[in-house]
Image (cartoon, rainbow, N blue to C red):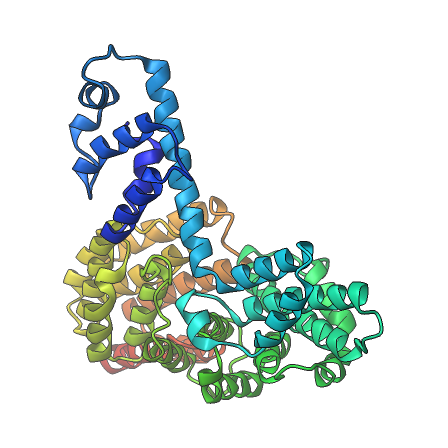
Length: 489
């Protein structure tokens, strides 16, 4: 029983939920089988872990039914029934929190039961304005609000059309359609972000994606449509900035998006605050860099998320390892060791437990590298076992830099030789990743050669090349060129 779905579900119950579940099982409305109640009464003794060896099926049977011989079929059915009750209880908990669904179902039932006067009274009391405390308490987005309003007013429109056709329903219809289109547009802009972000990583042709085709068709009329909507346009216009930024990839669009989000953050539910900050962060990976320090921008966006309590996953209260390591990397690029340590100390225990040791090794690698203790840094990076390809790209690049600092040319060449195998066997590496890695290793190999045999022309060519192909790491390469010239030149 220890690996059963029943115990998997019950282990997630809080102490209060477990007490209420007992009432649930004990209620004749939900359960009329006393054997199921007896089984639960035995199981609950092993709360909250529910991992005791005494939870073996036959041992539980002996304690629950001491005068009866073990019957596999009966035990299986009792466990099944209790599992179904646990599943039903979870649904009840969720529904009990979901005021939107409660209102929607309640209004539908009033209409179906012919309680027309009560329906008319109740529908007038339901607000169509976003309730931020409610949305935040239930991890709902502004899209959830628009979808709810659409369904509610759709029901109202149908009710009056059927029972009171003399009513002027134009305003009701316009409000219904405004809620529908508002939710649709926000979903569309979110999908546009996903297509561009994931499409770039997977190196696929986006031209035939239906989201791209649709938004290209309707984009000339977007502003005109938005201006006709009977809802606050601020929500849609903020998400529209996602589309503008990824469409043009310009710094001006990015800064406009950033300012609009930061200026209007108090209008938004926490779900959207987190979502839009992620969209903003994603933009820093694909912008056409002109003047901005994108590492600094990335850190500022993450810091804003932290300030808004929107950095952790709402369901798990965990931080993704990718976000953790990206922040650490940007701090290293910016040469901000104190910022790095402050962030790591605050959030490293928010990672998945099995990733914490690797995260500590990565932090120690970065701090050692920044302190120019390169032997120690190399030791830390060789301990890392990160399962995500996107992170392995950065790790390979950083390890190559560390090998240069420790003058490990032979090991560097081995890493360079293994690079082709790494790129060929990782389908999630896009052309941009491959180009970056090849350029990075090729550049460091030329640095090794320049350090071995200095040449003024090669030195100038490398300086020119680094400015062309590197953005965030140019300071490190410039520093290495300066060192070589000072020592060898």
